[in-house]
Image 1 (cartoon, one colour):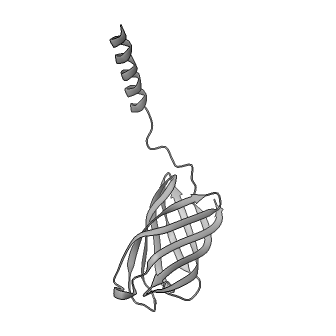
Image 2 (tube, one colour):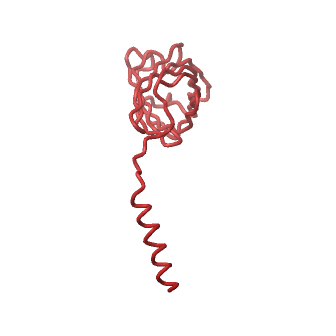
Image 3 (cartoon, one colour):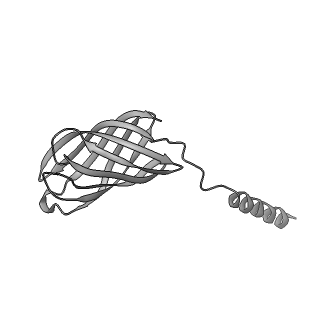
Length: 147
């Protein structure tokens, strides 16, 4: 009899797990306009610029763009955001020269939080064509009103 109940419990757990919807949309909404700062280090010098991000979200997928509104490394570049949010945001921020004074392009893997009206993302890796001018220790902090 004990074996029957143990087997029944295992079947019940298996069935309930199989019926769980793993594509449930994230309750974190990052869609909207966000304004804040991007802090970074280039060749040992710390820089900070004001940025604006415009993000769209469909389910857990986040896309959008960001721009630096003050002078610095990320000035005048075409910049995009892609990623997913499931409690925390994980994604890639790309930049390419428009009239970027550094003339280089790259992408950074970022991860972080996005809750209420604040996002805080930090770089986990950065690749670029910038050589020794490749930024490191990138942190984005922004506030806004998600839509």
